[in-house]
Length: 302
Image 1 (cartoon, rainbow, N blue to C red):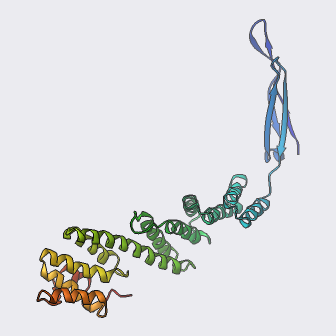
Image 2 (cartoon, rainbow, N blue to C red; image 1 turned 60 degrees about the vertical axis):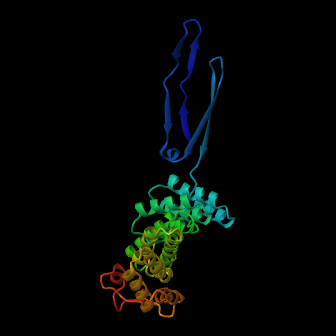
Image 3 (cartoon, one colour; image 1 turned 90 degrees about the vertical axis):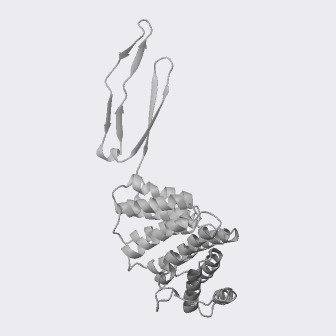
């Protein structure tokens, strides 16, 4: 493989201060040489002469680049592996190797804990290749990148919300995917985290006798996260909050729903004690929003 180049020579006329052309510039590359990378650099003579040196770097076969990426993965050099897999798209665009390199760079970023890079790379894969065999896996990695960044309930839960959205899309779009069952489980865990955040804030308001603010938080738990473990306590806290406001029929309804769905719950025993201590009993009010969320015969238990 040869690369033939003729370099325009330029001389400087010191007397006139003008540049004089000594010849025409031509750069000829054969079709084979065009597939290679040409690195050129020159060392200029301050008195007008020049030296020109060329270096030909042949293309690296796709399989070789891929194997180099795998070798770096084996050494747990995930950042280096990701960069190596990305070379496939640069050197072999619009090929199966390019597609394979994109999903592997996504995986390498994910394994290396670079979740921002992993989710961005995976999203790009889903957008470019929405119907390949690896597309559900790419979407799963997006969800897992958010899921692995879910903080404790004292902090913002944006990543939990994002994870739920992505996992639900995975379940809906690719119901036969091998990742569906785990996605459903992760939805449950992330939902429990969001419910826990609502409960934490609700208890905070309750301690400060901000009964309206507390009720709104506990209501969110019942409306959005009925399959989580926080429902029992949320119903009990509603009994407390409504008694604090003097809205007896809602407190009685919350206790009645709690007793119907969780008769052996310690929360129900506490709610029952709170009501009877005031000469009241659990009683379902048909007009209550709580009763509408939990119709007779329906249980929130999973």
